[in-house]
Image: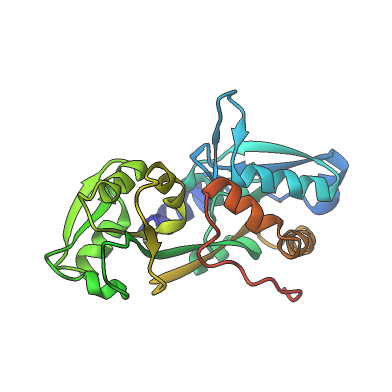
Length: 269
């Protein structure tokens, strides 16, 4: 995820290579024969994935995971996988695939393989019609207050790139949206897709996202290193889910708005 602090990758390497060791990933035939695909999902990341009111997993990743399993003719077994566990769980064969907004990075690709992109994460500006700006750099002014969450890597990014803006820090995504909705902050500079659903709580506010996107990351499905038959088959499944509109429709269902930077569907992967 964009909010990950990338310096943690050194810890991932240590866990994956040293403590857990490298296990042989189940190949496609073994998954089909077992009639189950083990899917790593984050248990605390709504609306991507989390435990719902009935203590069952729900969210974007769950719907997509079930669609993938159905395409393979197997059942989905969702394995709780916290953010730092995603790569180690793949390396140690605790899961067959990892969802959970797994951003493609060079560091991770040394340990695992990726499919084509499933979705994006776009860093941009969420504000209202009260703010007459068009570029994110326009926020670099002491007259503007930006809402963010304590501990987010984007807090440091904002201090470096918008040093003149004021910062108001809170604890949750809902709180950041509340600050802007109530007029106590002017904008949010973050991975805006994860914030859009909360804007529905302020129907009297005219929300807008600046078209001047700061950064777009591509998140894919992680598989075991060299597990090419599984990866290639998943790419075919993803092609169908993208071309049918399933991915974008499922995203809008859970996030309350279209993906800010949709994946451009292609038959080549």
